[in-house]
Length: 252
Ligand SMILES: C[S@@+](CC[C@H](N)C(=O)[O-])C[C@H]1O[C@@H](n2cnc3c(N)ncnc32)[C@H](O)[C@@H]1O
Image: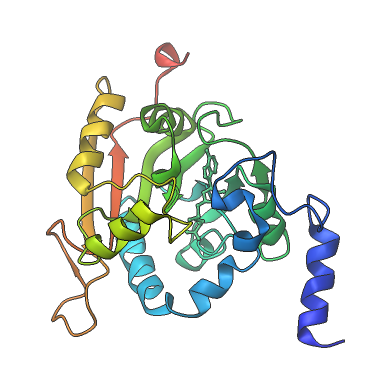
């Protein structure tokens, strides 16, 4: 059996939905369409490889600054490209996603626990994990404040986020693709900057004590630095560090 056949077989055995079902419940987002989900990882192996190295370096730097973090739940984990990496920096990860197609990919790539659910309603008790992670998934959330509050309920100490920056040198290209529907990944996405995200965080966690740290990466290859604290770059990482976990009195 060649490599492709063996991969197909693995996919078939692990698929959460029959392989001939191409879309899910009539939803129009790309992650409910096999044409996009089943080749998603190839993107990382191609044009995205250099970016990924810098993104992981930035996320590691942010989360390792909080020594309390030993376990993490990553929601919107997709095929687990990042979920299977956290252990390389000493963190035990669990993954969750809303898409049965993305999770079918995840099942044969990741050997940890996975759950299928919506980030707006996390199926976990308060303070279950040290941290919550959202990597290039927050852009798709309909009620970002609700998702932040859910994350702050389930995470004891912090929330790490990585996402496409609205202030990107590629803004014009991205906007044009979005406007004309050329790039399916962008059609239902909403983009943030570090400061627009910080406003949402402030609204979500008005009653809690926390600190926020962020940096941008995704700068051109020829640029003298690959990470900085100006709000420009393709991608930014942000860490919300809670001073204390939610107390008994604050739980809903
Ligand atoms: C761009 S992919 C990112 C996947 C992975 N985090 C990565 O960086 O490779 C976005 C993911 O978010 C998931 N997603 C979108 N909306 C969601 C929701 N409401 N709840 C949970 N997952 C969601 C999608 O299914 C998809 O797998």
